[in-house]
Amino acid sequence: MANIATFLFQHNDTPNRVLYRQFIDTEWVDFKAREILDLARSWQAFFRSMGLQQGDRVAICLKNNVHWVAFDQAAVAMGLVSVPLYADDNASNICFCIQDSGSRAVLVENDRIGRNLLKEGLTATRVLSLKSDIDKTADGIENAQHVLKSVEKKLEPFDLLDLKQDTLATICYTSGTSGRPKGVMLSHKNVISNVDSCFQLDIAKPDDVFLSFLPMSHMFERTGGYYLPLRVGAKVVYARGINQLPEDLATQAPTVLFAVPRIFEKFYGRIQASVKDSRFKRKAFEKLVDVGWRMEQGKGGILDHFQLPLLRAKVAQPILERLGGRLRLAVVGGAALDSTIAKAFIAMGLPILHGYGMTEACPVISVNRLEGNVPESVGPPLPNVEVMLGENDELLARGPNIMLGYWQNEEATNTAIDAEGWLHTGDVAEIKDKRIYIRGRIKDIMVLSNGEKFSPQDAETAIVGDDVFEQIVLIGEGRPFVGMIAVTANSNEKELIKRANDRLQHLPRYIRIRRIITSKEPWTVDNGLLTPTLKVKRAKVLDAFKDRINDLYAEGMGD
Image (cartoon, rainbow, N blue to C red; front, side, top):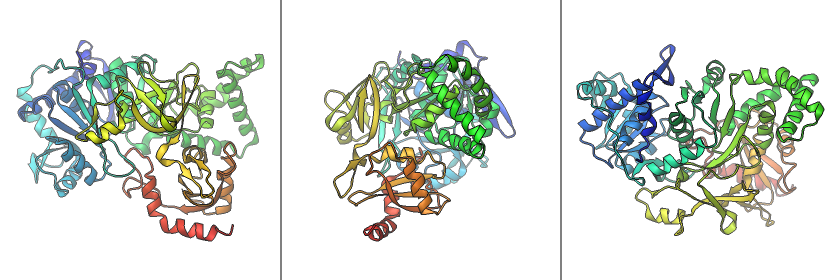
């Protein structure tokens, strides 16, 4: 049988197992397997009441919560196609994805999102609001809780179809950094193979506690923070929000975390700030990192063996307590993480596994292992995934996790996947000792007017490791020198240039910042400069600052 919903249905044998914890009103509430199964049965009764058939699409536009799981599992179990959407995305994008996919129904977080979709002209789709002030239905929006109550007498046993492996399971719209998103078609086989490959690496165990805060509409969180723990029966705690994340980490004490680099960049910045005014604390932390990293590489001496337990107890443990004190590993993806930061946490006793993937690969292509962790790399490919380098050192991947194609876009599909089944990632890479090193995006390669070429990714990753910089984009295409646009509260250009270049000493000398454009206004999803997955829309940023960029280079010609 090939059906993603077997991940949930297997827990029919352990109905009292706690699978989820969620903050409701004023307290944390646990949800057992039988409660999730019952909720999924309710959603299936609703789907049947609509007359939905295998292959029909239904959309989810929620924050992370148990209804996300139940709605998704109910749909894919019946052979429906789930279409996950970002609750924080703008209404225009959400509406486009619903209409492009032909979704028959959409479950939204609240009435506001529903009203905004209707204002965008959404028709022919039932709009259900989870947190609704509407009694039953009004102005085209239905109260989801009322809908579920209306089908209570129509509940049937959980409907789990035996599907062909290549049956379409989900359409995931890529939050592209330019243009309209494309719908990535993933099959039941794609998802199950990727989850099983991750399972083989001991990333999740039955007694683990995951803290989920990345949006489940992103395949990184959906595969790693939802399907994988459900597959093994681990508990998932839904964080209340990014602002409450530090408190939730401390109080919920997770053992596994799937995160983007910015979480650890900020935490590392706080560590640096806490030790900078004390020579003793600074030296102790530096000693911990030095000894801990040496020991992790298996190069420790006799003295290191005696020093490390003391250093971890006195220096590392108080730091790690702020993360709950029980983290046994963190998987980082979605962007590059400065290896200096990763090494510091690894030295403290918290393995950070840097991975790589893309929605088109469901999404994991590679990840570092607990043994032989090389944070400069994104690790070896997953079991069952092949990789090779193509033209211009582009990373190619092939395996059972590779997408069926793009929804109603054969031309884009044929561009992305060649005749031999290789997915063209668009990333420049190097493969050494079976490990993958990402060097940047092919389309982002920057060429200065003197002919020097480089990918800005490594430099940007290094610079943003200094917490004075909130967000940055390097500039210099066709220009005589490298500049930078930075979101920062500091307006001292001379100081900022020095701090940026201090982080670039490992790169060729022509990659040095000569001038900086500063802004105090953060780049956000709302102002259109970030994707819903918090990636910078480079082209949009360059367009927003084009006049200041032209002025900067006009002034700098005489430098």
